[in-house]
Figure 1 (cartoon, rainbow, N blue to C red):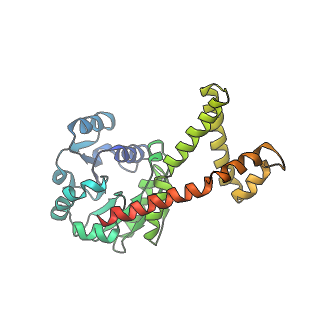
Figure 2: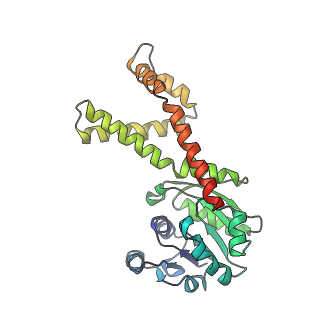
Figure 3: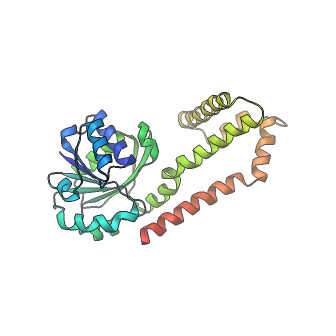
Length: 267
C-alpha cells in the first residue's frame, strides 16, 4: 500500500518516522505535500520520502491519505480532496474538532477515519484515540491501528463524541502535565535546590507515579493514601492544593478545551 500525507508538519513527521521505524511503509511508498518547500526538502533529506508541493500530485497513487493539517486550513484543502479522491482511498484525518460527518460532507467521500493523537507521538509515546465511518473496510481499520501503534498506543471508540473529549484530555493533556512538571521544578528551585537536581527528581517522580498507576491497577486515591501519613508533610501540601482549587482548576481547564474543540468543529 502507498500513503500520502497532506501536510508535513510535526505530527506528520512523527507518523512518518514511526511507520518507517516499524516497517508499516517503506520510504518509496510515502509522499508528502506541503506548501513550504523548505519543509519538503527536510523530510526528503531526513527520511527519503517522496515530496510534492502539489496536493493533487500527492493524492494520485496513494491508497491511504493522512490529512495532517490545522482546522484553519481546511477550506483551502477540502476542494482539492473533493475533486481528486478515488472511491478506493481511505482518508485518515487528524484535524481537531472536525467530525466524521462533517469531513465526509466537505470532501464528498465516505471512507473516513478520525484520529486524535498527541505530541508524544514524536517519541513514540502518543495516546491516540480514533473512530471510523461504517463504510471503511476492515483492512483499512487494521492498517490504521498499525500506523497508530507505530507512534504509541491506540484506542478505538465506537462513539465518536469521545474524540472531542479526548481532544481536551489526552491531546491537550501533555501541555497540562508539562506545566505541572515545570511548576514542580520551579518549586524545588524556590527552596534553594539546583535546577538540574530539581528537574531530575521531578521527572523521576512523575514517571514513577504514572508507572505505579498503570502497573498496580489501584485507584489513584488508594496509591496517594500510601504516601499521605497522618499529620505529615504530604497531607499539608494536599490541603494547600485543595484550598487553591487544584483539582477544580484542572477540570475547568479540560472543560474549556472540550468546548473549544466543539467550537472548532462548527467553524
